Length: 300
Image (cartoon, rainbow, N blue to C red; front, side):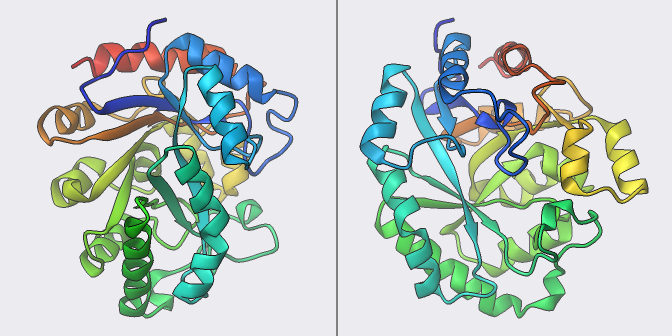
């Protein structure tokens, strides 16, 4: 398929999580990076986010992506600013920042992994998660501001990812974070994590649309979500059981995203992301279905 832009400077990407899970190594462990990139390019996606099977050498990765006509849309960084100083975080992120820059990507997706409980927190019940009230928010916000400002000076944008099981999950926590930090701390608008946490992502757009620097389009199967909450499954169990899926295959209403992209002046990546078991949800089939849905529903 031909690669088409939704709008000038709005690009459609896909996460490799549909092919290979970053945490549960048995999910997609047998699927090669070549298969992922070949599928993504042939479907029509313009770029991909970083995944665990990607080489961490910028020149090598740039060459591989270029061979497939793809760009690097961004990459996840597991941050610990709840526990580290800004200088410690800067050193921990140095190689990742270098890789993004060498590959021409501007988006560092920041996930706060500090204060998560257990030796394997993703296997702990969904209810066992950090509480924002555990920390001094103004101190944490100050660290994020400084870290984001230092990133900006290198040409990289911090995109904070609210996320199930992590420090910032619910609507009131997202509100508190955004109200406590400066504009330099950008936001990942993730439709699936918002829905699963009971947050209205359209309200997040209304309040903090100017902070959105990256978009993850993820859908949710409500029956699986209800079971996950009722039985307090782990995040990993919920993923294996199919709580998340690609856009157009669940209960999320994407009309607010369509309106936001049309009217806000948003410039950046719109990334299909769905943590699924590839044995149950064939990656090529589902990511192609998502591509067709987005091109039709978000056609601009």
